[in-house]
Image 1 (cartoon, rainbow, N blue to C red):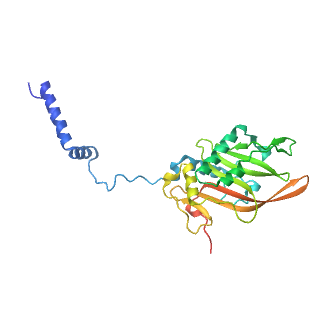
Image 2: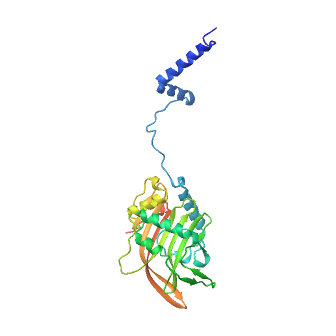
Image 3: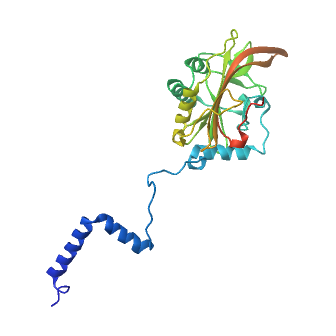
Length: 289
């Protein structure tokens, strides 16, 4: 009987082969690579991760789809004066066309508290936005009365939920805040808050650290290249070329005009606008000297 035919001999040879491979693992792997691939090739750095892109992130794919869908639809009239790039807003935008969201008050409170605790927005903005202590009702054009101590909501076809609180100033209705959240991830993509205007000193605007915190809450910090864009038309902004995404914040005075019993009411107020939106390098606005 030969050694291969003898059970003990076969065991001994297998053991010897294993020991030889263990003693020279690099040689073993090189031989295997050569046998499988037909060649060996040195790798300069095997631990360099691929560059991330916007397509790697669900929220940026959602925003891109939202923008594409909105490209054939005009913006609501009241949104056309907002600064910055145009952003898709759900068709249901007025109080009469939205639904009461009694269960969404906690959602709005939690979202704005998180943005405040992370340093994205100043606590003053949260206090103005979440002033639910009112017994006011608004009588709509349809003859229906709307309680103003609860948020109202609308959802678009992609699952973005817009929450709003409405309030009265001298009997005229205005938007106290508008908050857009992705229903799947909970990421805030757009925030608008109105504040009373007293004097010429504006309320605090989110700084660079606050904008970075906004990127973190959207799950986008791993893009790794958020920087303040050079020569930008946005005074407070961060841009990611990898993700082709822009985060911008604006605090500015505005004048709101409403009507009460055929009487025009003018309100001098401040607004905060904070948004995350897709933006290619070619679309990034720059200052023209």
